Length: 471
Image (cartoon, rainbow, N blue to C red):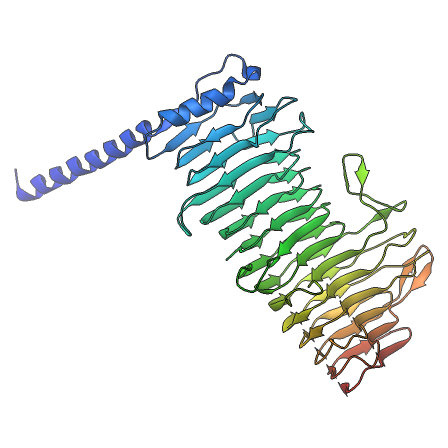
């Protein structure tokens, strides 16, 4: 045999050894869940936990057949690391019995590197006990563990659909989450969370909630519809060090989230909000058309697309809001006092850039004495830059700066203000003022190179001190 032939034979033997080793590893580290004769008797919990225990110490994959499995009393407890539960593309259904007393339908506590795909979890049969859909508590140090929930249907949890308290990498994508207390809860110290391509609807609280010390989160390409809050709690922390940071909120669609679409609470945040759409507000007979069970959202509350800052807390800073489509909210009929409706409402903020957004109104009023503004700077807003983009069709003003001594050194430049008339059930409405500086406590505002068309009252109502206007 020639030297070349011997070398070729050795290579073939080596490749056969590698392929057979991989095949053996796949077979050795994968378990198929045994058939359960009676899916309604709770045996499913024991079967999954039995299969987990059969995996080697290094973990592995458990394939769960399609079917409906009822969890009667306690949660499915995953207590081994590196476990992957593979369900059959939303043909594997998990339900709970009335009286279910588990902490969560699936609890991963003290184990690391967990994933689940293709499961449907429904907690509708138990409404008294408080429980999560999937709860993950990792013990590994920062950056080590990985938690993945993909292609799952999670609904009707009395607490959060997904709660993760993991210092590693979170991947929550391509899921449908609805009718929970909160949709996704990123608890303390979550790092590198990626929440993307999910539909999150009808939650009593936030669609996505930030707890504290959330770092390098990417919240993108989600649809957040008919929740009380779309995304909330960003930078909601107790001091400047333990804060959320390096957060990206991008390319999401916020639809009819009642109190606000996006909330950034307080403290420096290092956050970019870009390329999102906030749309579709419809009041029906004085009530809100999104509801949780038989409970409708109250009609005497405020409604804003973006809310920034909290009085008396650390000011919001290091924030960029750019290239979003905000508003265009056709409120066809308002009955009663609904408070203030804004595209962006800001308080206690410094060094925030709002650039190149389309901020459109379209509201009217009936028995309504509140105000409607595209952007409202309420108090303690300084060094805010509003630049570029369009602001149009707000009932009162495009930009309102309230009479507060903390509102100073703000800049409005290169913005196109449009007051195009629109028809309502009560006649024609039109934006009254492009910019209003409400009183003498506001100082050193700069208005530069803006374009004003068709305001029904005036372009600029300046009651401030030291205002500089450059046409």
